[in-house]
Image 1 (cartoon, rainbow, N blue to C red):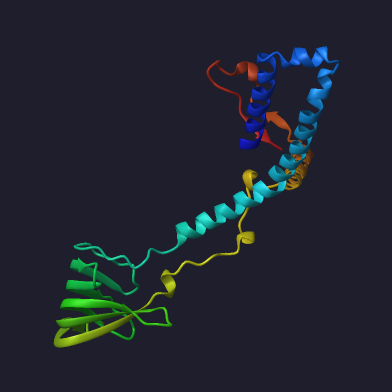
Image 2 (image 1 turned 180 degrees about the horizontal axis):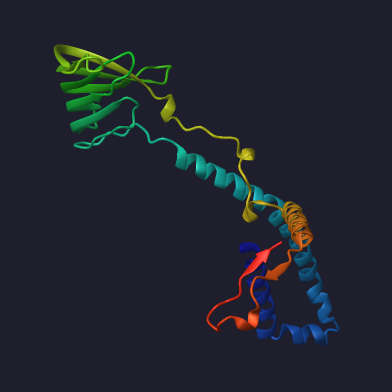
Length: 250
């Protein structure tokens, strides 16, 4: 869109200045044909037309397709580990976080509560701590949460017993590790996605058009091959004006 408009504006300015300063009259008086002035611009316009046709048919659709695929991958990516004060966060599988106060300078969490979901290998639990610290383990995709001065409230036997038992454990330090590989951004194969009119070349759209025309032609031939016959069940003149005749297909 920018190249044709810029060429148009540049051409209008150039020839406008020629006409404003009477340079065209001087050129004609010197015996130079106006066609001589048009030839360079015309040659450049033809060259730009060829380049823009190639760009619009091959480069632009592919760029639109890849940018659309990238946007879909970004939109489908899971949110990162982003804790906010006084807000429940359930971005980590199996845990729900609630932090009352955050310290951005030291990555320290104050008044931390973790709600642990039950699985086959662990019971449901509520972990509370006065403060905690988030650290990353070098060379891995693991995030370690170290909790200090708190307690663990576990619900035991809730799968088999009518009234579950509760076990409370006090701790001075409690460590939990989280795998952040599920939160990392990953690219999918863009060739597996379908293309639309903005991501297809003229040849691809012509192939789709031929396929649709063939399907429509085959469907039309099938419809004409049925040739249903309409037979009146009652004599039409005897029907009231407000009643339509009834037909059957044979």
